[in-house]
Length: 71
Image 1 (tube, rainbow, N blue to C red):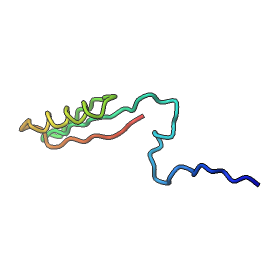
Image 2 (image 1 turned 180 degrees about the horizontal axis):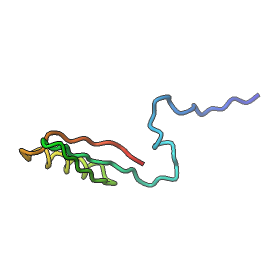
Image 3 (image 1 turned 90 degrees about the vertical axis):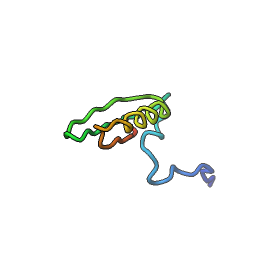
Image 4 (image 1 turned 90 degrees about the horizontal axis):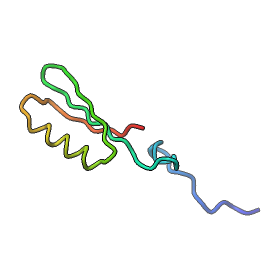
């Protein structure tokens, strides 16, 4: 019997990375304000999402920012 030489995907890997149809990933930046409001924006470029989050953190009314990968 012939064994399969390719190993299966690691457990815990992102479910988005296993989809071969995807040409790019989506990154959602959520900005939390001190008054309880939220604002979110989606990017397809991780670097742009990071720079947007860093730029928003400089504002005195921003409490926190978060970047997550979405489909």
